[in-house]
Length: 297
Image (cartoon, rainbow, N blue to C red; front, side, top):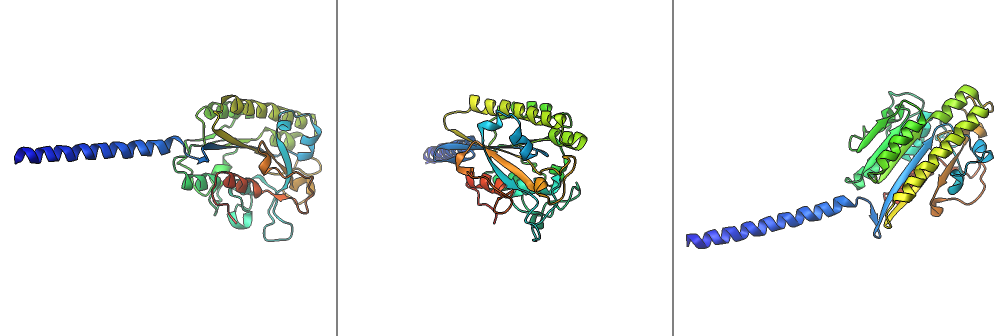
């Protein structure tokens, strides 16, 4: 009788161990692919180039931007409504990363002590896909300070104080780990604008940014697997005033920005003016749509 009980116990133990192994393997299978749609591994690369004037970009030879579909956006909210906001970096990056205007996210100026009232793309993606690999490399740390959360769940959250090429080097290194959502913020173009206004130095900063963009696109295209589908988005936070040195107001040149993407579905194929143009909130909401995360209203 005792022997039979032992045999039964051992049998149950084996079943329990096998069940645990099955559950573990099943869990690991979900860990390997965080964002999957119709057998596609969907990944998003969001590149923000601070202070890039859209009209100057159109005038210059930028062969790597030419590899993308480009649409005109507007920042600064809608004039004379509750959504109107300053065309400064703080409010604009908050809008890009949340999909709402400052009347909702509450980042109303450049102030590292302000905290967003709205979860960012990092929070929203992590909530739906807790195993997703999220990385961020930025030049201006106030962007992190303003976020809804400290995004401690991100695999990499980096600030590069040096020049843009250093940030791009680090970003390319991290892309080898195949993140599901990757954000890169560059700042040299905006610095050139504040220092020199519209000038040959400003033009050169955009040409340099185009070269760095090309390196990133090449790395993605040369290393992606057949089942990996990338949504690449390149944008800026604000335009510039008539001199090119400042921004913050509601002039057309300060409000006009752009949205460049490799995905024709998310490209609006028409020349736009401020009236009826695509709002900056479209950026985050197109990313959420691509990843099947419910967009904010």
